[in-house]
Image (cartoon, rainbow, N blue to C red; front, side, top):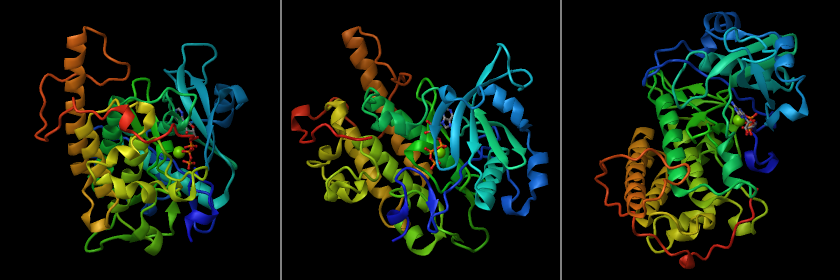
Length: 405
Ligand SMILES: Nc1ncnc2c1ncn2[C@@H]1O[C@H](COP(=O)(O)OP(=O)(O)OP(=O)(O)O)[C@@H](O)[C@H]1O
Ligand SMILES: [Mg+2]
């Protein structure tokens, strides 16, 4: 039942079919975000007046986005439309003409109480959190029925666009692991904050990328503060996105940080396989990525079957196998899932070995580094037995090119 039957594949909804509204960004410039007040305990006036965000007028944002013109449209989600805009960097007012700061403006489709609640949640969380792996919210607009959010512009859009669009060049192994590390760090920051934050809507379309494939998580409209005291979970209406929500959350409505870790496992699988969490264009047995991939993940001889054929076998076999077993761990029973801090450590080791391998290859070939490769490190801190030179031949891969997106 649940999300699966009634939802569009890509946007977040509730069981009752109300579309989700995302959005919130926070500001705190340290590894551990500072203690925050509970969003539900703060009134709207308190939230809006205490944040450092700029309150934009509707006409400013209209002018900044060329009247919300089609040529400015960046994308569409369940919340509404996202436009590219240009504002004055110094005053954060609409820039006519340059110098300008490029921003992304999300314009909420008027959706009543639920939409407003999530808009406010976004302002509340992102008004308080600041971290390199969380998108920066610059301001908001609240005028009559109009609700808008103004973010820093992320030049490469969402991970979803890069993984599944056939018109976009395939991501290299190095970039995929770099993205996995950045996204894992973003989630770890939320989970390690006091009180902890459960993100609740972790998916490829909410992972934004800058020009160098650095990751920032967006959309905090569904985020929740975790349980306090002796409580083990918070009870909620089930909200999220088909294919990413943890089974125990769908079944019970009990929300914990472990639910995010499950969703992370799904995204990691998407990164490895280049397949969507749910793909109705696939044969029945392959529609649900997790069910299809699970039998292969823990098998050294079989895991390559899930690997994205668009990488043409150009990935380190051991690193890829460790990543696939990590995905499996994230997808197992809630109590056995690793914490996000543990996930970060494992992925960082895979990345370090990938970088080292890239460095030695580059040195041997005297060739420039491939586009998207992360900074080369001088030593390999990984205690894991990773041997990047081992890579399965593309000929071993039985996967035909996938028709995704
Ligand atoms: N800060 C940003 N910079 C650049 N592009 C952005 C930014 N925020 C969003 N986008 C683009 O707009 C698209 C729509 O984003 P939005 O969050 O509204 O929807 P979604 O994530 O696809 O779905 P959902 O509503 O379920 O979150 C994104 O996929 C991305 O391509
Ligand atoms: Mg989104």
